[in-house]
Length: 280
Image 1 (cartoon, rainbow, N blue to C red):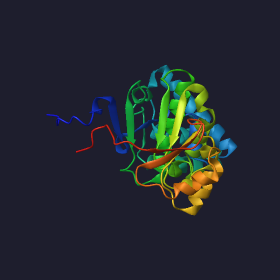
Image 2 (cartoon, rainbow, N blue to C red):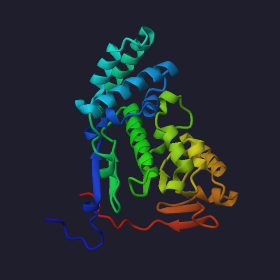
Image 3 (cartoon, one colour):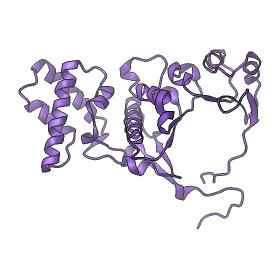
Image 4 (cartoon, one colour):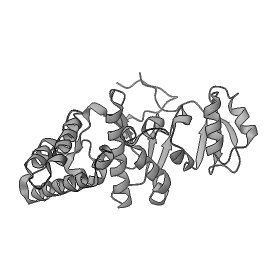
C-alpha cells in the first residue's frame, strides 16, 4: 500500500524507467549514417559496401524473411563476393566488436513510440553500464531516432535531458570516443524549429562541447568554484556580466543564477524543495 504523504506527489504512474541492461537496438532500424557514427573509422568504400548489405537485408525482410541481427549482417558481409577482401576483414572485425557489446537485436526495445508520450517522463538509467562507448551508442541512437521521428511528426514535442552531458558531448575527444557528440550538436542547433528541446546538465562545464553549450539559450548555474569552469561559462553565456560571474562563487546550497533568453537580465533565485515523492 502506498505511503500517505501530504507534502509529496506520486508521479510513478507517469514515469517509465528503462534499465540499460534491457535496451536493445534493432539492427534493421540502423541506417548507414547511424552506423558510421557508431564506427567512426569507416572509409567511403566500406560505408558503401556496408550500406548496400544493410539495404539488401532490409529488402529481403520486406519480402518476408523477417528481421535480421548482427549475426545475419556479419554472414551477409562474409558471403558477398563484390566486397573486396581488404574491406571485408575490417568490416567483420567491427561487426564482431559491436556484437560483444550485447546491445543489438532484431527489434528495438523499448520502441521509440513507447519512449515519448505526452505527460510521460522516461528515464533511461545508464548507471549499470561501465562502458562509455556503450552509453554513447545508446544516447546517439535514441537521440538520432527521436529527432528523426519528431521532424516527421511521428512523436510529440519532447525535452531531452542529458545528465553528465560532458560524457556524451565532450569538448576534447577524438570522433571514436565522442560517438554521441554530433547528434547532440545537431539538436542544440536545429531542434527548437521542430519542438525537440535539449537540456544539458554537467558539473564539469569546461569538459562540455563549446558548440553545444553555445547553442543553449538559457543557462541555470549553481555554485561553481573552479576558475576554468567559471571562465568557460562566462565565455559561452552571453547574458552574464562580470559581477554575476563573481557572485557564482559565493552561492549557497539551493541558490542559483538564471541567465539568457528566459530572463531579460541575470536573475538569482532559490530552488524550492522537491514536490515529487522521494525514493524509499
